[in-house]
Amino acid sequence: MKNSAPTRLHSLGQLRRVVKVGDAASGAVRTALRPIRALGFPYRKPMVPKGVVVPADPSKLGANFETGWARSSAAKAARAVVTNGPMRAFVKVVASPQVVGLDRLADLQRLEETPPVIFAPNHHSHVDTPLIITVVPEPWRSTLVVAAAADYFFDKRGKGVLAALTLNAFPIDREVTSRKSSDELRRLIEDGWSVVIYPEGGRSPDGWGQEFKGGAAYLANRTGAAVVPVFIDGTGSIYGKGMKRLKRGTTKVIFGTPLSPIEGESTRRFNARIEAAVAALGDEALTDFWTSRQRAAQGKSTKLTGPEYNGWRRQWALADHRKLGRAGVRRRQTRRWPDLG
Image 1 (cartoon, one colour):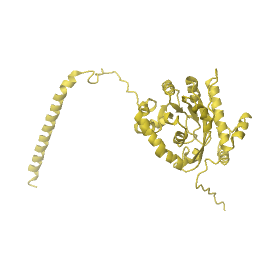
Image 2 (cartoon, rainbow, N blue to C red):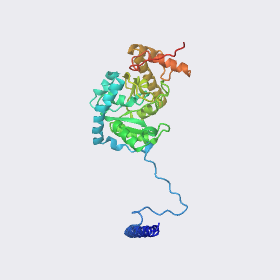
Image 3 (cartoon, rainbow, N blue to C red):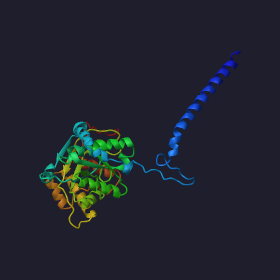
Image 4 (cartoon, one colour):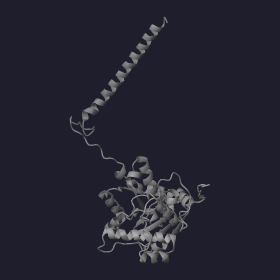
């Protein structure tokens, strides 16, 4: 107890010395920075008068995410390694795809200079993108850009960099038609890049399709590029919207005959033609080419959007619909019925 007062005084003395050293250091820093402060603008931010609100810098995420670097030679080489290695292995193990209709693209492939095209598949799962990237034939595969939802894939810096590098994803606003995005996609097509656009705008919420939006048709009208309708069957059962984990299954990808806008055809009519072509491919996935084309000619193709009724009847119809084809069947699937006594 007798030594407590001197100990406190000693501690206070040490504290005062530390404070003096800190003040001396901060003073030295201020002195060193004084010439820089004197330089003013543009070497430092301009002063803002009181009462003036300076607008925030525009966000570099979402639709403003810069992806031009992902189409450089180095990025293309890295992406080729990912596509032909782990991505292809993942698709083979998880989705076991059967690809049909590649012969319908042969006429374009035989041209002296293969033109860029717009692939327009239906959309049920995040598995759709790696699947379509790995089954699209060359020379389009190595020059493929995927139009991806800006609010989902580019909401964070890390996620956006990964999507741009591995998928060559390009951000688009799926809620509002952006002149900037459409102009950039048009320039990419003019530079020889092909594009994957999901006309539904997002994944199916219940296993049936959604009405097509006019993005692919509008871009084709502006660039003259042909639209290749594509039907993907089975990915909704593997990793559909709302599922917590992957479930291995089988898939089927059917490429249709390339479509070009007819002179004077509006974007709305061309979009309806694209949707009808994808619906016919959906019928082909469940039956065969001849039957599906007969049904399409008679206007009896199964609608991508499914039956009009809602609730359990819609889900029941979906289950019956999936039984017609080989795709979408989960491996090791066991159905347990309730014990009613």
